[in-house]
Length: 145
Image (cartoon, rainbow, N blue to C red; front, side, top):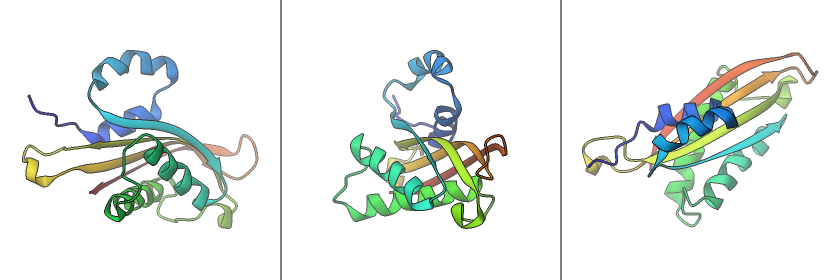
């Protein structure tokens, strides 16, 4: 049996499902290597740090292996490009985000020599730092480890 998983699709679903919806989806995640978290900030570094910390705490990356941290960083930045519509800035542009994120690590290719990949998905809101002025947003980044 293959341990292939559509890591990007899985990450987007995990980031966007409510707690109640997760109950229905959870059985299909057996064997998946993932974690979910939340972050809200006007500071891009806080978003990056929240995702990196979650990945390390849940054993999705080895904190002492630079290539794994580097792969995660690029997946985060690619995902945030979607969230911010290509302008990688939030506080500097008077924007704030409230995001759920999911990190999924796996082997998405049939050929095992392609190795492991990591996906980071974000779902939530972005907008002016005024309650009620935000709108939905989503972003996905995938990088090889």
